[in-house]
Image (cartoon, rainbow, N blue to C red; front, top):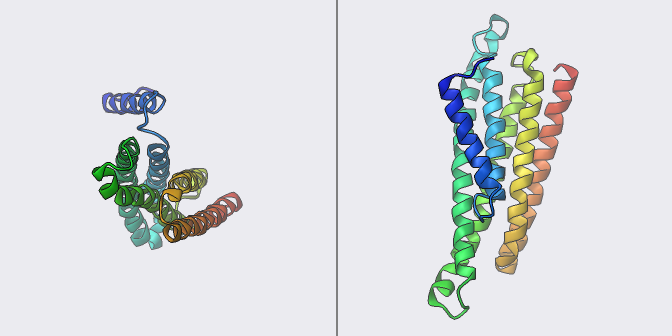
Length: 209
């Protein structure tokens, strides 16, 4: 199979990201990887929809498919944005942590920076929960020949959520005790939702709907 010039350019961009991810630099790191994994799941879901829209046998589901296409595109874009935001949040915390405790900038900015380092990965998990909900609606309403792709999209969405959860787990101890406990409780609940949803999708794909 030949590769189009545009596809070759995009492939180089992916290779560049992987080189940056593997480099001895603090960013991009796990947060960027988590966001990208979730975004890939959303993009794969879009492919399932693309091969389903317009089929006579699925005409009754056309409104759902159209809405899914817009939703999946928006989710992928949001997860990529959150990947960037996660890198910025980590960089800020890293910068402040190098300052003496008596430095006014550390004292003034620390609480907001640490809160941001938890809120961003939590938002990633929220997006993955929503993504899995959207993917579940495609079980039985999309092209059955794309069942494996739909299942893989669900696996990636769950992986994105579980990956982002690690950043919450690592950063939450920097928060005040009550905020820490709330964040950790939220992440456990959200990740469990993702596990259940992904499991349902895989089961339905395995069973042929």
